[in-house]
Image (cartoon, rainbow, N blue to C red):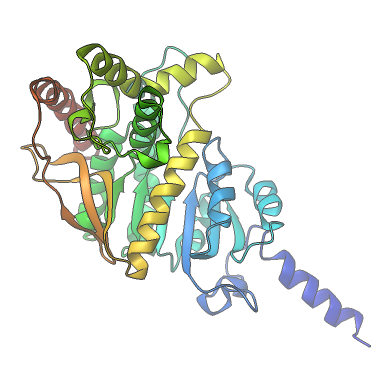
Length: 353
């Protein structure tokens, strides 16, 4: 019969899978990161896991068979979220980390970092209104990434993405760890919305639609290339105006519909997981993984731009050209670049000031 001390040790080991770890806890060693019988796969960290995007994102990542270890970090409420999600009967082992003193432990040995951390949009707020708070949060998190997992692929969700990706790049440059192929701003929600709204107009399943969305991730910087939609379709000028406006203002549509109760958290979590899954499949070595993302780019004269990119084990393997644009899209591109340039400079200046 097992002694009480032996049973207590086993209970303590199980509890440490989901309770925030004390500094120096031996359970944090890489060799102890997987439970007995745990699924093979990748180690993923979500920074901001207790927030409106973070919670559904964490739940969906727990369901991903490519994830073997899932680290959930936030400055509040991580123990409850971690305990809740850890009860799901999927292969990934879940651990929670609470507060900045545990941030390094949350990041050690991680393959993919997903960052939804930051304050959400509220009615009347633009993404730029979020800048002063979220810029500081992204800076702090990226400084820790540079120290603890500089080779990880980073998926940055925190708004305004047009500025936070340049902030992250500057932080990594200062630390001497910058690899532009490994830093990706997540614009997948724009693509998801475009596919959905176009499918409604066409009367087809949105899973059968592919709309490239380029530029940035706010307002007029979001440029859906409806001339390149698959399956091919010729939209009327009225349809182009309607679809472009709705795709560009999809976030505002949700903020206003929630009437102060939040922003686009659920659809953003879905889109973030869809993009993270593409990154994990690329890390596994799958070929032909092409997604739109906001990355360091030479597609235009701007240092960052969202367009289709081929993903591989090292992150972005190739940035694809924009392809042929019609007059409406060329005009939209010029407007997008002007606003995007200011947002990029704002992010760079935040670090260099």
